[in-house]
Image (cartoon, rainbow, N blue to C red):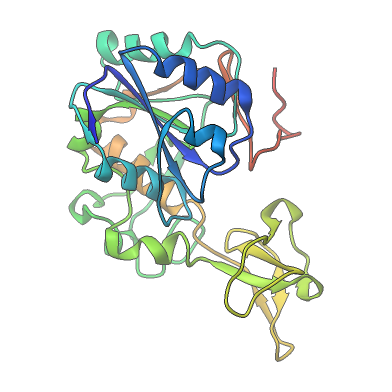
Length: 291
């Protein structure tokens, strides 16, 4: 699918239920300068099918979804891309013009919505929430870039804006193709509710699909969930994991190639700006309320 428009929205389809966001994107797509493409985790509802170009991809993580989308699409180098979740609350659509101006006239390379936390990242560390078991260099497409410990600005997958030429210069998103399933889809446990001990309910969701050996009343807990679960043999196993590793891998590349001053945000508030609010799994975050 050829993309020649000035602006492209790539939307990760999870929830499909924010009509102010969906309707606004639909109105934008009527403009010759704007295209909207949905990269979906599952079959979208009819109201998405009727209004947008879309495709279902097997993915379980937004950065993987974005990479699948740009591999599928034929995007012009000059296109300014907005990579967004579908559970966003729009307040003021002027964010589009602001982002375009920051990129075209002020030389910014990547723009987030609400401010994100900086991180001191060491590519040599292993097996933490932001480090994979064998070290980041074993999983990235660009191991030559991951050569020093450094403070980095981070970019959340819920909202990122970049010109496609700049994204292509850093070889797109992460991780390496052969590790996509392991890092995204594969990194979850399916656990009977009565076996969960000291778990964080914000990191646990009902499983409403089917999977071999798993059915309701099972839940799934991503390996970033924290806490413990009881194995069938009675032993406890700690739930640890790699929830932010792909976010960090991508953010590191932007910082490394373009410098930390190439990244900015629309707000100094977490998740929230005067233009957009980033919901968490389709819900408002009580610790970071919408303004």
